[in-house]
Every structure is written in structure tokens, then in C-alpha cells.
Length: 106
Image (cartoon, rainbow, N blue to C red; front, side, top):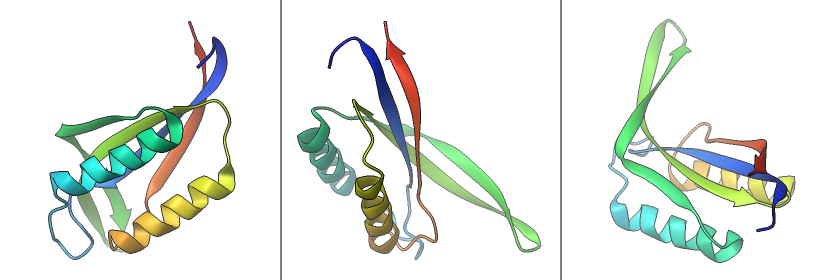
């Protein structure tokens, strides 16, 4: 990747499916390989999961989350939308957050 602008894409993933089943290390390893094959590299933060809290109805919901990151020279919104929809189906989630920010490599 050359110096200059690119994008950091972060994928926030639950550690359990929407059905309460743990998502195993093998699943994360396959997903990381898929992203590495597509973008030349990926980073995961799995061992110290974050905690996501949000308001839903009359209460607060929470998830233990992992973060997977890739750096991309350009963004293809249709690729990311398709990936998000697939992950939502595969992991039985109402919404998977995929966010990107422009970065400047130093």
C-alpha cells in the first residue's frame, strides 16, 4: 500500500450469534483469511472483547464484540453492503456495523 490516503474499515462482530451460540475461533480464522485474501491483510482483536451497549425498547441490550480491521485503498460500498448482509444472516444478527474512516499513512 502506498503512502497517502486510504481507508481503515472496522467490522464490529458479536462473540455470540443472535441465538446465543458462541462464535468459535475457527469461524474468525476463516473470516480473517477471507479478508486477507481480498485486501492483503487484516487485523483482529478477539482476545479482549469489547462490550457494546444500546437502548432497545424499554431496556438496555449488550453484546461482547470483537473488532476486525482492514486497510483499503478505495471503498466499494456494494462489496461492504453485501458482506454486511451476509454476516447478519450467518450470525443471526439484526445489524452488523461496518464503518470506515479515511486515514493518511505516515
